[in-house]
Length: 270
Length: 287
Picture: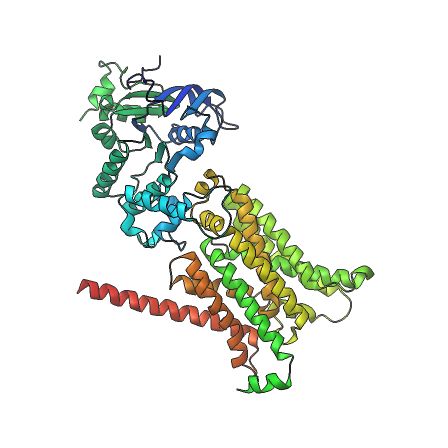
C-alpha cells in the first residue's frame, strides 16, 4: 500500500506543481522498470527532497518531470500540462560539474544561455533577455559575479549561477539534481537558505544524497527506490534510511510503515 | 625589406599574402570553438580524410575525361565534409568509442591519399603541396575560393554563435532547451572541415591543426569570453599566417613550417608570461 502523501490537500487557489498517477517507466531493454506505480503530488508551495539509493530512479523521476521520457503506464501532469508542454516553465539545475569550466564564458553568458531556445538565431541576446538574466542574478544574490569568468568561481558560486540560469526563464517549478555535491558545508548552508528563500514563491524538487539536510530543513521528502514513498521529512530517521539504502534494490519499504519491532533498523540507530 | 621590394616586381607574391590573411581569418573565427569544444583531434581526423579526398580527385582526374579539370581541393573538401558529418553522428551515438574511429580515419585518410596518387600515372609531387602547403603557387582564383569559404564561415558562425557556445558549455542543458545538439555539432564540424580546406594552400593539411588551435589557445590565455577570444585570435592568426612568410622570404626556410613554428612560439611565450604574471599576483596578494 503506498503511503499517503503528507502534504495538505490542494486547494482551488493553488494548483498543483506536478502530479504523477500510477506512473511506471522502464528503459529500453531493461529487465525491470526503473520506476513502478508512482503516485506523487507536488504542491505549489512544496520543497520536496528526493532521496534514495544510487540507481533507485531519482534522476529518472526528474527526467519524467522534464518530459524527457514518456511513462509506459500512468499519467504525469506538470503545471497542469503534459511535461513536454510545461518544459519551458520548468527550471532545471544540474550538478555544477556538468558545465565545462574551461570554455571561455563569463557568468552573464552562462545565465543568458538559460534564455536560449529553438528560435534563437544570431550572435547576441536582446535587451529583454539581459534584463531577465540580471533579475535572475539578483534573485540568487550573484549580480556582483556577472563579469567574472565562470571557470574562476568556486563550486558554491557556480551552483548559484546555474540556479540563476534556471531562473532566467522565470520558471513556475524548479528542479535540482544534487546541487550540494562537491560543495563545502558552509557554502551548502548558504545554498540551502537561498533555495528556502526562493521556495517562498516557487515549488522546488531537489534530488539529494544529504539526508541530514532533508531531515533538518525540509518538510516533505520522497524516498525513491523503484517505488516512491512520499513522507514528512521528519519521519525519515537516519537509521531507517541506512537500512533502506542497504536493502535490496527495488525493496519497497515505507519509512513510516517500517515496524518498530524491526530489530535491524533499531539496532543500527546511533 | 626584400619581400616588399620584390612585391612590386613579382606580382605573384601578393596572392600568397592575401591567402595567408584569409586563412588567418578562417582559423581565428573557427579555432576558438575547436578549442572550447575540445575538437582538435576531430579536426585532425577531418584534415587527414581530406588528404584521401585530394588523392581520390587526382586519381579520378587522370582516369575520367569528364573530370579532367577537377580541382583536387574540391575532392578534399567533399571528403572533409563527409568525415565531419560522420564524426558528429558517431560522437552522438557511440560516445567513448570515438577516439578509435578518429585514430583510424586519421591514418586511413592519409593512406588512401598516398595510394591513389601512386596509382596515378605521371609525376607524384603534387600531393606534397596539399600536405605541407604551397604558398608560392597560390593564384587569384585560389584566393577567390578562399574568400567565398571565409564568407560562409563567418556568416554561419554569426548565425550559430549562441548555439555553439551553449553546446560547448553544457550540451545536455542545450538539448533540454530545444537546441538540436547533433545538428549544431554537425554544423560546427563542417565549419572545421571547410577551415582546414582554406588552410591547405597556406600551411597544408598536416600543419592545419596548428593554426586551427594555437592562435585560439593563445587568445584563451588573455581573455575569458568567447567573442573576445575570437576578437584576439583573428588578428593574431592573420599576423601569424602572413608575417613569417615575409620574414623568411629570400632565405632557405620555407614559409609553411615557419608559420607553424611562429604560432607555437607565440603560444609558449604568452603561456609563460601569463604564469609569471599570475605568480607575481599571488605573491603580491599574499604579502
